[in-house]
Image (cartoon, rainbow, N blue to C red; front, side, top):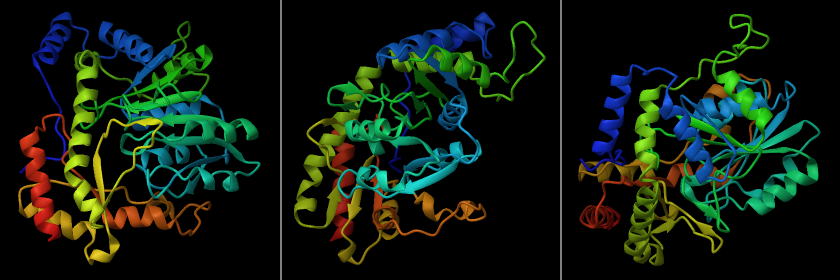
Length: 371
């Protein structure tokens, strides 16, 4: 079975982990944590980086660090991972969902302003599958209404908006280092910011809000979101090859695009657009079936699996999630693009171990299924 994604591990990761074990500093203290934070934040032209145990934790901490009043509203795309909404719910905030653009599959910015009320305090921006959101338009809205921007760039490490790296936007930007990301620690996440006060708050909150001079007296409630030195060692080894990983992801994406363009021209599928101002890393390479084919994503994915190719469905829209229906803020809404993306969209193998022969195999089998 050709997997959707698998991490690219080398001897350097092994050597760094062995160094950690031999040093004895395997928990949440150690040089690899500090070095990764410093180097990763500098790579994104940020002043501070705070490592945590997952991308979900990073989003939760980001909202908690802003001290938003309970019941405040946060605007975010419906077509994304549930972590973005969980970060609101776990902080006593209300997620407000907007639909997607048909071409980039990102949040439809034209719908954002109409969702703003006097309770709106933040926007969470997600660069879907590596394609940047139009940040100038987001900033224009945020400044007009004096609301925070939080950037989720977990899918867009290495992507650029008008020459500026994703991860450098917003009051806080958050990423994940799960196994399928551009660089990985197995699990892990990070918050980046230029605000020293916020950075200090993030560092406190991730570690149970301990007070250095009165360690077991707590003036606020924090989290145990610490990460280990072992994970940071793997992450640093990965980071030292970040340009190689980014370039490989772009090559995979552009190779797929070249080979799949005839299917798009024939009206069988639709590919994610890449705007002229965007540089996408194609974190996952997605396709959208033409709804008139009489096939949905589930059927095509099953057929590909039978031919030895692993795929993954697109995100299930957050506005339809059963788990949210019990909340008083839940509203029944129709967001047709998000719903269509889920029904007809899926992504192909996109891991760093792909080569041209494997990509050709995937494309040929897809053609076979669609015929």
